Amino acid sequence: QKEVEQNSGPLSVPEGAIASLNCTYSDRGSQSFFWYRQYSGKSPELIMFIYSNGDKEDGRFTAQLNKASQYVSLLIRDSQPSDSATYLCAVTGNNDMRFGAGTRLTVKP
Amino acid sequence: GAVVSQHPSWVICKSGTSVKIECRSLDFQATTMFWYRQFPKQSLMLMATSNEGSKATYEQGVEKDKFLINHASLTLSTLTVTSAHPEDSSFYICSLPGGGSSYNEQFFGPGTRLTVL
Image 1 (cartoon, rainbow over the protein chains, first blue to last red):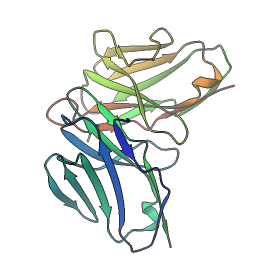
Image 2 (tube, one colour):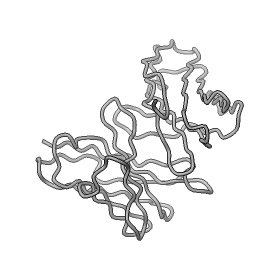
Image 3 (cartoon, helix red, strand yellow):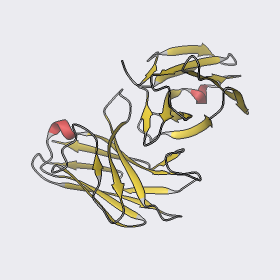
Image 4 (cartoon, each protein chain N blue to C red):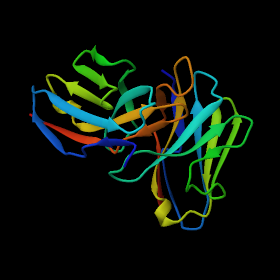
């Protein structure tokens, strides 16, 4: 079982729609959860992070964490073509950060 | 967040040669830096943790004699790929931990694309 799992996609949504990205993790002791966006050929850039159960909103982005289910998600509202990228879920425990394989999102105009 | 630079941004070399990649923290001192490798359409894989003034900590399966890491100062870590082969062609990215404690969010350098012919 992979430590951090994501659907590889591709996920395609029309412009203006809500994109929903999901991630599960295996280490119940994980403490912090991050969403990074990576454009092709570029390094990851942090979108947002979440520590506590529930929702955290930042502009068009909402992260949701459910530690009991070991599940974290990212919702992107009013999706734009510029949101087209690979989204990486990352989880930290005591010592390091582990990444999922990423979900490729395409927002069609 | 931290500002991280990498040099070079891309490099092409012949098989059997060595390549050095630099990672610099531009705005704060970093006792720890991370080195990742990313193959096409795959996620980031942690290679090693670079520690200022001491030996790097390598992940399982990463050859420490092949991937030499030197963290000579609080603002510079280098990764040298020795005797590079085509299978070493990859995107190498360094990062710095941020936040009030270790292993919170990480700030990534722009990456170095290595192509070994």
